[in-house]
Length: 49
Image (cartoon, rainbow, N blue to C red; front, top):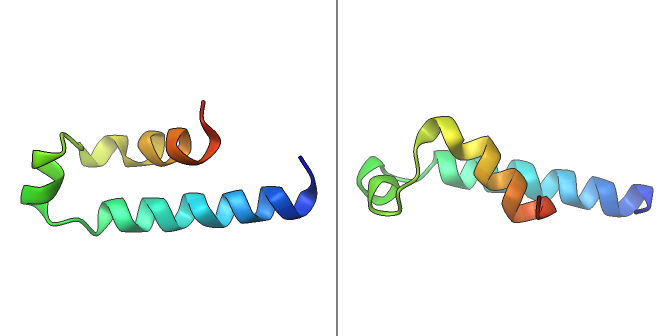
């Protein structure tokens, strides 16, 4: 991947983390999202591994 692609993915990762952390608790629980796993979920969503 090139530098610009990496920057875009990094920005998307941080947006995804921010969005997941901003979910109301009841919504996060309904989606089985534990706050301790937010970074792992965001990483998998953006980078695919």
